Image (cartoon, rainbow, N blue to C red):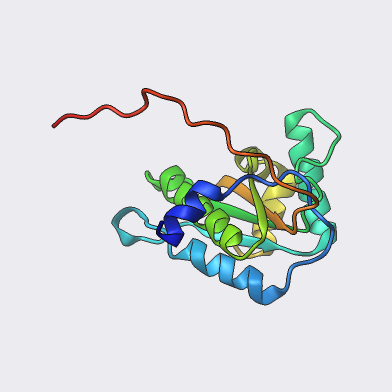
Length: 173
């Protein structure tokens, strides 16, 4: 089977990470794959905030947990968070950002790195703390958080794939 299709079939969300930081060159390769995602009209509007600073990562985790109404770490101890955002006025923001997220996770899998899409990026980036992070980076205007892609080395085996459900494809020949 083609290695790209194999990666799509084999990739699983990782929900337990070692605290070891990934090499920056590996994070950069994963980000590059995300930036090559398909996007509407070739506008390349999504951006990625790469968070490797533990203090900022922990702050994002606490903000995300607060939105979720929990106190646990929604990032599962992953040392890296890639926050994908797109301009709020862009009509394809969710689709384009979702394609970036998919590329990030597939690239990570292909390199033996665990990943997981963590929701609530939209709500976190709408908080005053979230807006402050954007302002400190010079990201002006209105941005919508699409997703958080957490990365790290898996701390244990990943779950087995569920059997695919039947009756999900309809042909018109």
